[in-house]
Length: 305
Image 1 (cartoon, rainbow, N blue to C red):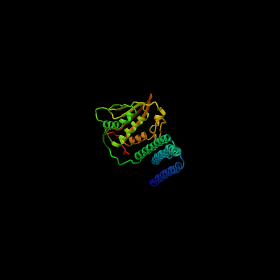
Image 2 (cartoon, rainbow, N blue to C red; image 1 turned 180 degrees about the vertical axis):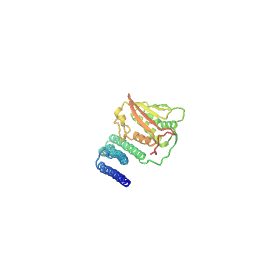
Image 3 (cartoon, helix red, strand yellow; image 1 turned 90 degrees about the vertical axis):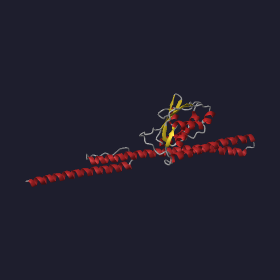
Image 4 (cartoon, helix red, strand yellow; image 1 turned 45 degrees about the horizontal axis):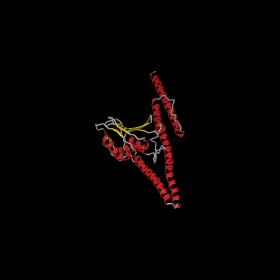
């Protein structure tokens, strides 16, 4: 009698194990076919299985996490392709415009016999050559800033002093534009762990942007928490243009000889050093805010470009 009971229990256990194995096999088949379908199709849907087995459902969720990452990488790749296409198109236009003008005026120069016309054509060719030179230099700086993500070291940098040095370097350019900046810098030294050369380039590019768009004023404020704000009236801009100021090769037509790389470089460098840079347009005033995490902050710093 007891042997019959044990036999029945054994048979029941075997049946339960067989049923569990079959359910797991069904779940594995659903995962296998579902994954093949997701990889074959450009879809945003995730895997779903009918199995209630916690191990199989955990496996399905793990695969769904990978699918989400794959989707993110795909979108990033597609976005990168669009940016590259737009960059090449804009770059081709930027290079072709002054080159076409130079070729045209060289042709006129060959045909003219007037010394006055010759002088005028030479000046025009010279100005177009300067545009090409500026574009080439900014392109070089941009690709240097975005291709080498390691190699530069961090050091304690006093923001007060770095800001004063950049303002001194741009004194002549600001004076030529008749801009007398209002500068508010606290007495307390504000230190951040940064790459000094990269910070100087960031500050210089922001001031260079003010030289292009300012109506004649510039206010620079360094707050106690380390945020640097640049503000100036900019009647040439509007909200939509300000939203695109950090886009590569985006230029506002009224900005003479602008290649659209200055603020893009500033953004790349700022983010590489773990900082943030934003722009907003409020009642005709452009505000650009630059900030870096304080020492000991949990915000992880990346390698600077």
